[in-house]
Image (cartoon, rainbow, N blue to C red; front, side):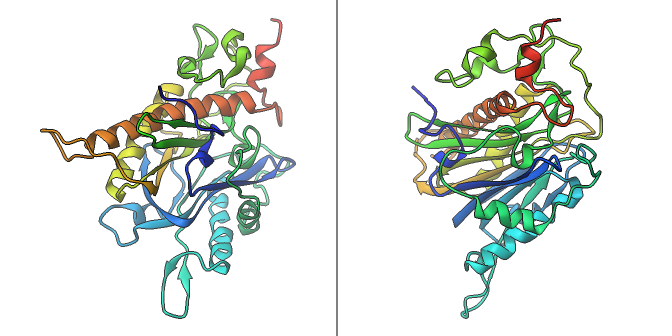
Amino acid sequence: MNQPGPLNCLTDVAGLQVGSYTDRAAVCGCTVVLCPSGATAGVDVRGAAPGTRETDLLDPVNLVEQVQAIVLSGGSVYGLACADGVVRWLSEQGIGFPLDEAGHVAPIVPGAVLYDLGRGPEFVPPIGPDWGRGACLATSNGLVQMGCCGAGTGAVAGGVKGGLGSASLVLDSGLTVAALVAVNCLGSVLDPATGRFWELGQELAGEFGPAAQQAKVLPPWPPQAEPAKNTTIAVVATDAALSKARCAKVAQMAQDGLVRAIRPAHTMFDGDTVFALATGQRPLPQAPGFFGPPAALAVSQIGAAAADCLSRAIIRGLLAAESLAGWPAFRDLAGRKD
């Protein structure tokens, strides 16, 4: 039976490290997923207002096969600068696409940003390359900090405080699949008929806790969601060996988990973007059949697991979030007496 990995977060995927830089005073931050040995990557962009970097490079027809990091950041267009600090830090470590025999490298660092401008004391937070470098220095392969940290610091999810969340799953095949997400959506994560999370039934091993099962947060949820100030960005990953094309397929399937957990999703005001990473630590199971290549079933199972992990990570991010900058957290709304 499928169960969460030992840490129940993205770092259960061998070869990945996660770190965040958080400025709670500025109500903003960034999160870095490092792949020191490289990882094959794909991306799927569904929202109508994305803010991204290096996504064209992930097209299977293009040259570079692996990335060295993915950056998720607040700060909207200003947050894209965080990736510059990550590139510089990686180059100092000699990690990147090899350029010559002298050891020069070009670190490949795609990224995506969410809109959290105006939620701190300054409309534009002091975000930049130093924040990306700081996130690199904080990376580890241990537990991923969740809630009001990193890219989730200034996030708001349908009028409730959003946050950074993560979850993992070990398949019966032995492969590990996981997700990391910064939830900052226009749509709601809560069913207005029940006041509970849409995807509450995806819980594994009691990871949401009794409060999530018992609490109800019924509308209205003050303050209300803000159109044009949104976007949910995520990384899903596996330790399987996948091609760029198959990573793109996994990213595409993972969006299903976002759609199930957030309603509506992919709106004109969201820039929903999902990256997929494959570290290649384990061979892809082969299941010969009449339809499709032998690995097709395994890729489909990984994509389905990525969608489930993303739904669970979204809920875990909101459960971990605290009320901040006037935005109420689920934990506080669930405990109020109307």
